[in-house]
Length: 407
Image (cartoon, rainbow, N blue to C red; front, side):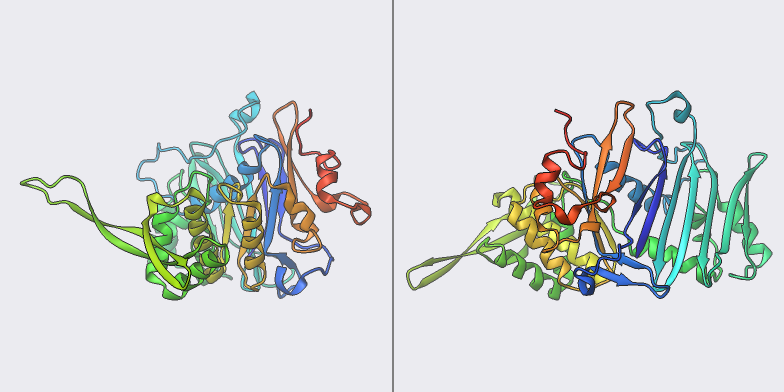
């Protein structure tokens, strides 16, 4: 599970900010929304980020997505960009490296991954774990006279010189140590536990424009239990959908040299009642509402995150979804105790009135951008007197917490 991330000089984050899933001492919904690690740290399963347009909400999710994906992004050419984008509204930061520090748990073992890079190369990279109170360095990578140097801790993961040298050779200046490690057949249990979490327990960020139908089709076709749960969700959401399935259809033009291509597309069965008679009519996915298709994809992704104990970032959860449907999605997610985590941004301030009813106060975050175009990040629980407020939503609308339009 993820504990926190520190971000500096990335997109609208010029100064270092820290986002955290660590819970406050509040015991509300402790059994379902909080997971206790072996060292006593309590981690939240849900975080919701508010802020006006262009305030930096999406950039927080992009930062997490970038770090996790960069660890496995391969480049065959040393001149290819790393893909990082610094804060561009300042001449100094444009040419300075971006800095990230990701803290996460693999079961009960705490890991800290540090990454510092610009668009051309990695300047510093380090992975540590906590087997005791003090951190144990697993690898440390830095530049020396333009050359990549990687140090491994022989007291943690034993590695022979030949393997260490091979990893160093494969570690181009614009890739992570994890990429180079994957090309060498060697056993590094502690490092590989972290690698496995980054690879399999984090999911790609979902944007408002992300098309999820093919993904949902694949997952529900491969997993009948998941298909049943998604169908149950759609029925509970009052879509009057009683069945869905992938149906083969032909696309393209048939010619002398090429046959039509066969693809699978979703069809949804709708049950219609007329008196005592019930009939099922099947509609192609393109004839369904955008909201139905979005709900089908979002719910499949969330169930996948739950089954994998994975972190799932969703930007603008409310996209094409009714506010009550958003509440149902979060309620269904939180009622099951897993080690998955959901990080969402939203403009639906109605969720703020569900604090102490469905959503914990320490799950709420805000982004705000000042005149220097720099994003600041803060938590609802940073403010005092919350228990005296009759409505968190109204307080937010009245600019009690900032993170709203100035006029």
